[in-house]
Length: 97
Image 1 (cartoon, rainbow, N blue to C red):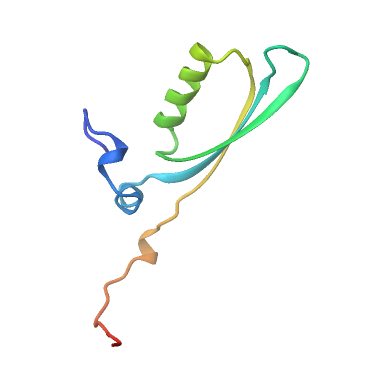
Image 2 (image 1 turned 180 degrees about the vertical axis):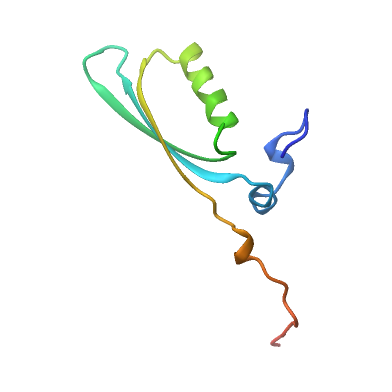
C-alpha cells in the first residue's frame, strides 16, 4: 500500500503488483455531449487496488468535474496478476555465453 504523499510513479509495475495492485479494465459508457441520446464507449486500463479502486474513483471524479459527457454506466473487470503461489525462490542460475 502506498503511504501518504507517495504516488504510483515511484514504483515499478512489478512492485505495485506485489503490494496488491491489480490490472483493472474499465468500460465507461457515457452520453455524447452534443447528442445526449447517443452513448459512446471508452475503455481504460490501469493498476488499482480492489475493492475500493482509489485511482478509478479519482479518474471518475475528474471526469464528472471536467468532461461534459454524462456517465451512463461503468463496468470494472479485474484479476490479481501475481498470486503468492506463483512466486518461488530459484535455487540456481544458469548463464549461456
